[in-house]
Structure formats: structure tokens, C-alpha cells
Length: 326
Ligand code: UDP
Image 1 (spheres, rainbow, N blue to C red):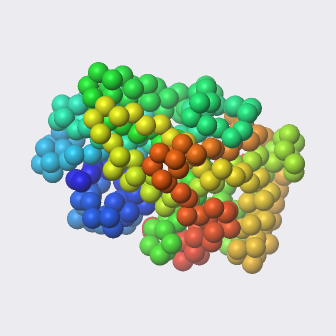
Image 2: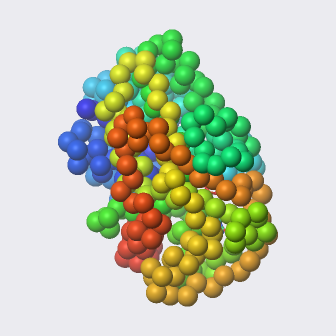
């Protein structure tokens, strides 16, 4: 396949690009490099451009005879989305509709979309399956769910085949150490704990120790970024015109913040200074995925089934790239 990957120089996108290339697909990356990194993708495959530039996208789809689009490009900071919803609706929703229009104009029938467990909000019943009602509680989740709805309508009316993949907590790095996570600012738990282990930060603050969980801290389902990449590949290969796929992606097992810290200490062999702080607004106590549907329908299986293996790859990346891609 000739695949266009928007946001392909970002964290999850770059791992997908690497996998698609290794499987023999012809891949083009379209990335603004606002958050993505030039060094995360092959230089001769990168087109630097903004998602709002539909003219440029049109050109690329025609020139490269693209037959599938994998759409990662989006803003993804929940807190920022609450402060600046306009930024999120514009980029994540309006610009995505622009891309979808390009896809429709050029008769492309395979589209894979990065959705999120944030579209579920705060469900109480675990694990979260595809039947769990979607009720997002912040603008980030709203924009992602709105795109899912648009995809459904486009799929029904125009025959675009699509997959909406709802990631739980993406973590880890390529096993060969070549690419990994590098966000500015970094807000995610695992890299921050590893930074504290390395002495790059003085400590890790635990956001809330009074949750109704066994050790009082939030529980999340961490999934390795290469396992996410594999799900995209399988979805792409399955898609046919008009087919609508929705899958939740996690390992089906949750780890508390304290368990993550302990695992990072074991993997690095270093003590992590901890500060107990207040809850972060908007954090549900527990989020665990059921990924049975994608396992059954596409034969997807996570290679990394325990947190330790995931953290080992993240540690290999951060220890060898203390300044990320810089
Ligand atoms: N967390 C924390 N301290 C931090 C960053 C995160 O205690 O400095 C907690 C956060 O409250 C959540 C979990 O770690 O329960 C995972 O947070 P992250 O931001 O990595 O991902 P999210 O679940 O928000 O997508």
C-alpha cells in the first residue's frame, strides 16, 4: 500500500511509520514538526506541512497515488484542551474534516484514525469495551468523539472504510532503541518517573493518593507503542470500502501510579523521590481496556503483556537519549 501518515513524526506515528516500512509498504509522512521530530522518520519520506493546508494534502495524495491514510496529527493535552478548546476544535476536528474531504475527493477508501479512551469519560464498569457508552468529559475527548461520528457518517454515505482506534496509555519505545518518546513539555507518567530516576527532575509528584483503589492512586492500562503500531497495520490491511471498525487498545491489565514508580525503580535500579500531591482535575480513578474485539476480529495480540517489559524499552530510550531527539 501507499500510505500517508499524518503526524508521522510524533511519538506513536513514528513507530507506526517504522513498522509499515518494515512490512514493505510505501510510506509518506506529513507532519508540521510543531510537536513531531525530524529525526524520528526517514528524511526522504518527510513532507513538512500543516494539517490545515488542504491544497498541499491534495497534491500529495495525487502525486504519490496514496491509497490509505493513517491520521495521527492532533493536539493531545487534556489540560490544555480545557484552557484552549478553540485550538483543539480547530485542529483536531476542523482540520480533520478538511483531510477527510481530501480523502473523499480522491476516492481513498482506507482511513485509520487515532482515537482515545478519553472518549469514554469516567465509566465505572471495567474493563471498557466497545459497548461502553462514550461520554467524554473534556474538550480533547469531545473533539475525538466528534471525528468518530463524522467518520461514521462519511463511511455510510461515501463508502470510506475506516478504523477508529481508541488508545489507552501509550508507553515504551522501539525495541532497537532507535526511536522513542519525546514530548515538550512532558506530562506522561512513565517518562517523568524515569526522568526523576535519572536526576533530570528532582522528584515525581503523585497526583492523588485518596482514590478508591487498593493503594489510593490512579490505575491505568499501559500499552506498548509498537503493539499500537501493529493494531494500525492490521486495521489497514483489513479495511474495505464502507467497513467501519472500532477497537479499544490496551493490555487489559491496570497498574497504579505507585506500581509504575516501583517498576521504574526495579528497571533502572535507582530510587525515585516521590512527593504526594493533590488529584489532577479530570482524572478518572481507573481505566482498563478490553481489547477482546480486536483480538478476535483481527488476530491482534500485544507482544508486551506486562508493564516491566514496556518500561524496559522506555528506559533504554531515555537512558541513551537524555535529550530526546536533540
Ligand atoms: N500522573 C502522576 N504524576 C505525574 C503524571 C501523571 O501521578 O506527574 C498520574 C496521572 O494522574 C494518571 C497517570 O499518572 O493517573 C497517568 O497519567 P498520564 O498523564 O501519563 O496519562 P493519562 O492517563 O492522563 O492519559
